[in-house]
Image 1 (cartoon, rainbow over the protein chains, first blue to last red):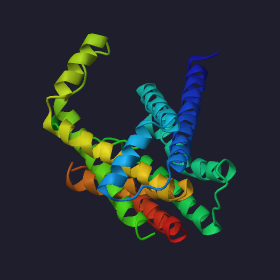
Image 2: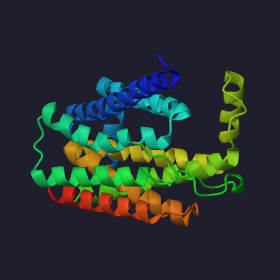
Image 3: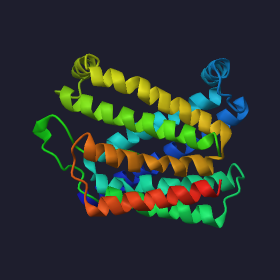
Image 4: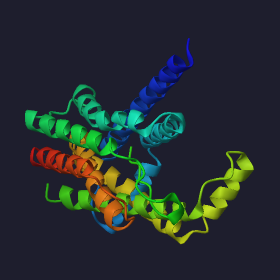
Length: 147
Length: 124
């Protein structure tokens, strides 16, 4: 296997890992919060929700998956171009919505699907621009990277 | 929807504020000398002496907590796509706080994200 093929294969594996970790993490957070119930906005309500989330195993599994996402993302961009890795972040919104329908049986209207598609294209456009536009020696400035 | 939109605004502002403060702080801290454990510990220690990093940490914690509150109130198919508004506030912060150049293509992407988020929210 050539060096380029190996690079493509390990990037693909890392991007798949990113997508699985990010989407599973968010799904676990949703499942955990559904177990806890609606949070009420009052001092006691917020405190109770904080204690409940700390004691909820599903939330911790979600956090572990999100840590996995961060690590796989950092690993992927350490050798691959940001513009190559980034579309996974854009399509994550569509994958998450699909998982919400399939796993959580949420109802998604056609109008919301159109909104999700517009978000994916928008995020893709944002990611295709130059990742650094300022002088790195100025002490400020490369673009922030959002998953 | 009355309670979701203010919480979404809080989530977006705290996460973007946290990311911008972290970016600003880490640019001052600089890169780690190497990825050896001791060098990483020194790097972490240096980061912990930066005021902007300390400003970023509670903001990022607040953003995570507000995301959990949003997930307890609304379907995930609404919350996660709506959280893409981060790109809008992030781009404004990058332009005006971090003085980055924002190209026409990026503004177009941001406008599309805005329109998509509005569509997602009005179906909620």
